[in-house]
Length: 113
Image 1 (cartoon, rainbow, N blue to C red):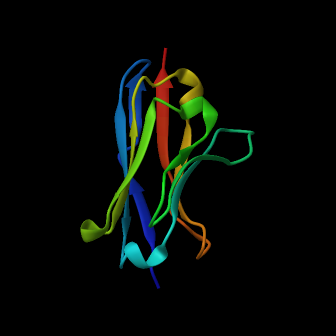
Image 2 (cartoon, helix red, strand yellow):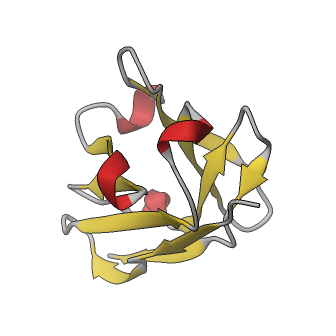
């Protein structure tokens, strides 16, 4: 019943920042753990960050210190703050509720050099 919709992607220069949003059409709190993934052309989808409903956040090593995942349960939204972006960060970014196997449609992030 719950659907996830990502937004906030776009074109940004290397070193810049973007904040992605994932809005749920229902309670995001009830979904438990949330995650961001990304997929570049010709590559497998890879985990970016996870945020459990309770506990510490985790990040892929290459994104540590640059990306921050957060959630606002009152707004039914999860965020991904991306700083110090690099061209290799270019990908479609997807919101995921792994315990429910729910995915958003993705939002394109393009980082130019």
